[in-house]
Every structure is written in C-alpha cells, then in structure tokens.
Length: 90
View 1: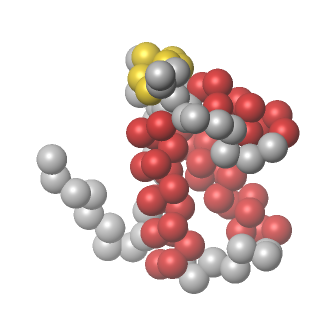
View 2: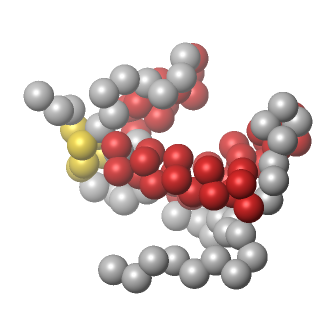
C-alpha cells in the first residue's frame, strides 16, 4: 500500500516515497514532505543540470548549488535551467 504526503511542490496530497532518499534530517524531511512525482522530476532535472553544466560532484560548490536549486525547485521558485532549455509540452 502506498503512503500519502502533502507535497511541498504541488501543495496537495500525493503518493509519497517508499523510503527516505538519504540518511539524516534532510532525507527525513524529503520523505515526509515531497511526493514521489516531485522527487522523480527533481532527479531528472538534477541529472540534466549536472550533464549540461558539466558539474563536478566532488566540488563542495556544486553540492551547495544543487541543494539551493533543489530547494527552489520544491518551493515553486524560479530555478536554474540549462541555456536554451525548453520545457516539454503536455
């Protein structure tokens, strides 16, 4: 049986993750407040940012950048997109 969370991004009840995506308080916060759909969308977007911007994941500045963009993404604020990015049409 799937669990339901009130999704921070979509501001409605949605299917939640099966487990915290990583340990600690931040992982628990994501588990409690981020829907499965929003998390999957973030992972796809994060991968695009890493690839298009050729980010080095070992660089602390990259980790800080991605955390900031993650917070913006979930809050519905304007977040970084690769140059020339056109969102898919529904």
